[in-house]
Length: 548
Ligand code: ADP
Image 1 (cartoon, helix red, strand yellow):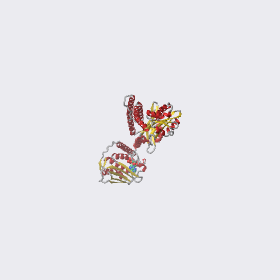
Image 2 (image 1 turned 60 degrees about the vertical axis):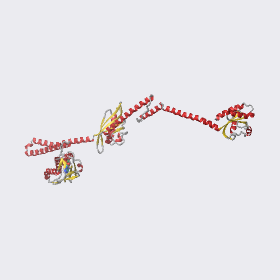
Image 3 (image 1 turned 135 degrees about the vertical axis):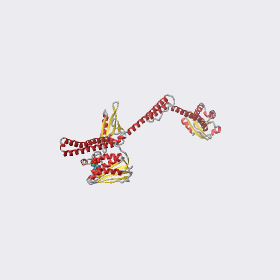
Image 4 (image 1 turned 30 degrees about the vertical axis):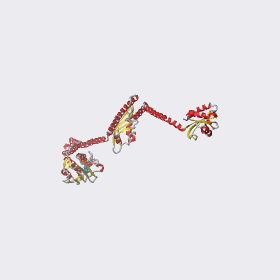
């Protein structure tokens, strides 16, 4: 509006400029111009005197105040054009004024001023607001439309696919790319999704295989270790940790750091260097005295060592059994050789003339018989022991009255006890609960214990067989006041061939197998046997059996 006014001011100015004498016809000119333009036009001379005005005539025009102080006039005089909004007392209305020199180059020719009520300006503004609003709305809609088209565009979809692909790479295989439509991007998205499906399937399979491997490894008795080419542990199972008492975490560390067994470190290093599998026997000191058999091999991939795998087997028990077996064979040979050597010696003496002296001959034959008897006893005990140990001995469990079995055993031992003037007493109540046992085998155990008591008690000793019930079981005791067993031997007397002070006991004619057989028989009947003794004050054996 203001610029239109400026434009019209310029027109009015041009018109006025062509007028030769402004002063005379100024008011008529102002009236005409005002009518033509539909505005108020005022013509003012350089001194500020109003020469003509559309809205003022005659008297009113003459008495109108000087306009030199009007801001738009001052501005126009100074700069060529001026503008102001002001309340016009003349028209009692807010007006927009635009003033201009009549001659742009010469302020002395006066000023032409156009004015329009602001209500007109507002009206014009309101008229224009509608179209502006529509235009603004249209552009917003257009922008949104363009945005949508761009958003639906291939660039955005490719970007989404890139995001999905990086998700797959990060293991989030549940994500899928948008695969709608049938353009190239959609085809790409579909193959990406197919790839993701396959990836997911493989991951599931891989995970399953891993957990199977874990289960197998953890279920193994053997320790298993996998290392990288530098010997650091990648994977180890529970058995490995147990065997070597390894410190956690095992993974990522060298064997020596976790297990503190130099031989283990050395074995793994050798395996990494060697072309062939390596085997080692690693002795672990300490209380258990463990022996570990290790089988190791390097893992090669296209000629390069990528790691080593090692399997560890605890062979301590095997070693122990092997040692026991070796000792047993040595013991048996030794035990058999002694009587055999004696028999052979005496038989040779008889053959080489000994028979000629009937008295010596009779003595020699007795010695030969004694040794042959010992041989027989030994062999019988050995066979018995073997049968019990291998579970081949027939054990018929049935309710047995202890009093009967004890009385019979005592009767067998009585002559020998009487020979040494021992006092042999029996304290087995008749109303005891019956025990679940094999009658003959139980008799054999008691006879053996009584036999020992008689043997290892000096003449005139006291031997007592007693029995008492004890929480669902019955305990039979064979007690003597004999030589006793030194504490250091107590733990071993149930071992085969173990005797306290070999020479002492061999004189008594024992085989060293009696207690081993007694222990095995008792256990086969579901019972236990224990010993309590101290040197010099006698020995007590207790056999506990389940009540029937
Ligand atoms: P043996 O046939 O030599 O008696 P055992 O196995 O019956 O063999 O006994 C093993 C060893 O235990 C005996 O040699 C003896 O040293 C010791 N022993 C067994 N019973 C007694 C006992 N009542 N008093 C002292 N020592 C005993």
